[in-house]
Image (cartoon, each protein chain N blue to C red):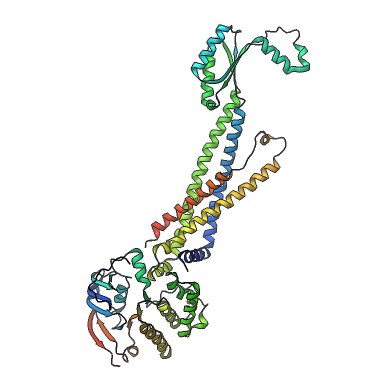
Length: 295
Length: 236
């Protein structure tokens, strides 16, 4: 019998003898992973949705008067001096009228009696993709509003504001659930291993007396922690996948979720979650071994 | 083991004790001034009344307890300075049958005996074979799968002895091996110990039972109030 067979046999005995507390720990780890992974999944999908929506993000600056070529150049320079942007387009009153008429399509005849300069001239500014954070957009908008001749700024402020607040809330939830995962997984595993150690003092003393090495005595407890982390995270992720499939099936068709492309984690993220769970549970196990298994 | 602590000890010395004492708080002197040499392959008897210090002496030899003073060497190693893997390896070579048996009541007889072999990574087949052989020798074959918590005291005592000799240790320490046994079973136990001794193991037996040492020509050390009272040889 080699070391690992002996250790695995010992681990099996530990698990059999303390199966009820092991099962509770396993459930706790699974739930922690499920909660954390659930919010992470929403977060990553919302980030993706935000990215896709921000592709169409542009600021429209309505001007009091139609700017001449010299004024256009001045405004272009001022905007570029303030912040680098992807593009700046000046829309004349005439072009604005034409666009409006195109949008109305067959109903454009209602514009026949309207003067062609009744719509204001404007500037369409597309910010750089890397500078589309809520605060940057807000700063740019405030700057544009302060420019002389500006009448109004429009970029879907309310929507952008709500979206970024929602993302900030989601970030807090992710951090909290991540902390919860770390605390519960680590403490529950540490507690279970501690119970196992305390419940098996007689056996551990005997093992020492008959010449078991420290590794022989400690390894099964460490393996228990690793198994808790591995099994807990796998079951948690399977449960999340079930939930994901259920949502995908039941919320297909016209609905708010359909606005977004809802994807599951990539294999590398799944592996990362499993490894993180194993690491945390191993740390919990190791801390109990260090504290309560004095050899 | 990495280090031989005393290269002056003759190769045939298994246990060397020099001025060993053991005190317990507040001021109980369990052992004092014990100096003793036990040769390799010797069968050595420790006798004395209850409380004389026999069990304490065995506990010191197997490093279950530390001496308050003095030097203890087993197989040339200062057992009180050994740590970690070195200590574990030495303990694998020492089989101990404790007075309180130290059996795991929720494990079967076979599992209890196997423990001492599992820690030294013996092959499963060899362990099974050895366990069956020992149970045969001690008339416990029918108890193979019984939990030790369900055995009588006499049976538990024999299981503890079987575990002590199972790993074929170089040194076997036995505390009151026949305390709960009838004459016939006592004979089986002594046969097992004699067989181990003939195979080369050094055996130290702490006992009250005069019948097991009087007929032998082995050395007998009597303790009184924690001190050596006499060392004699049996009259075979």
